[in-house]
Figure 1 (cartoon, rainbow, N blue to C red):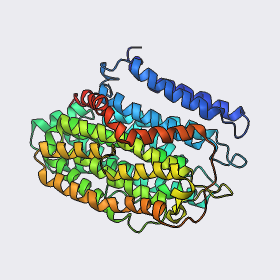
Figure 2 (cartoon, rainbow, N blue to C red; figure 1 turned 90 degrees about the vertical axis):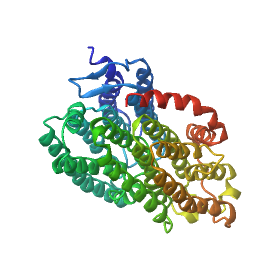
Figure 3 (cartoon, helix red, strand yellow; figure 1 turned 60 degrees about the vertical axis):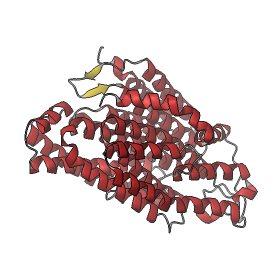
Figure 4 (cartoon, helix red, strand yellow; figure 1 turned 60 degrees about the horizontal axis):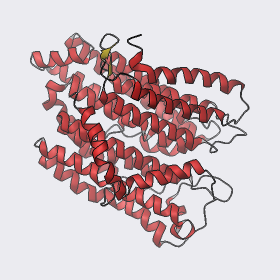
Length: 475
């Protein structure tokens, strides 16, 4: 029971997933009850997260950490999952798609992501990652009558299987050359002797497997196709909760298990950071689909998070946590706006040209989307500027001034395609009005996200900063 108390949120979600699976089997087709029950379970997990002991150290034989770092990540994951469930309400075709399974898959994926951020052993790391991934493969291909969705799920599954093989090979090398799977044992092995080729190879393959999950270059190839083909609520979830889980997993692996080998993994992270920023900025230029554009935006933003990770230490971890929290709100807000892009017949519209003149037909929606675009670009005075400044400061404090300068310059390059969206909405001639969608909860979420990224968000710098500092204090 002492081991179960720190994992109370996971227990709640596990029980809820089993119950909702049975409930969906007997509920009326298209019933929305499963969605709201799943949201209630996720909010209950957030409450349980506050009540569960977070200073229990490492449990289950040192394989699972109940600490502030994991709690910070889980809060982001659970809230992202709740928003993804709310976004799907009324989106799926209730005549042909039994949407009752969707919230169950989201809950299972959230459990896997939760285990990922708490993993302190390579075996637990892999279990959490696979639980999250297996649910994600089904979610990507959830619209089985849609060829694009089926293609997205197949691509994600094939490339995800390849990434899992790479990760397992790296894990086997680390275990073979250190004799341990725990992060503590691996750290001791790196600190206790010379770091040979075998250890470097294990480190590289393990980070490559994690890089696939965060869609960092050069393991980003699946992201645009999967983001475009998957249902929009699923894409929003992929871009928020699981991505942040993978980023925080990589942070714990680098700073905990591979801490003594900082000079070795820092080179890999710096390359991935700069490559992701460059490709995410340049490759988005010619995109005409807004979901593909947001996919490259997520690659670009992962690069900035990796700049904070490259800084290492407590300051770098704090910057990554702060960046993750703000990034999730900006991304979910943008996808909530994309969800409103429907034609007169209710069909989703995803082309950039469909945004033409949106400021004249739906000025409030255009204003919200413009705020999210400016914030993702890191343009002051919007709140998205602050986390970028934090990762740059962390890099400078760690003696990585050239990296900070390069990332700051590339921020200007990436701002082009965000400004392009604003230009289309405010300066192009209207091509037709979107269908009016009456979803008050989603509207409230858009307003809340817009207020968060507005200058009012600076009022939250100290509260979020303190939480991030406390969470990063374990390193």
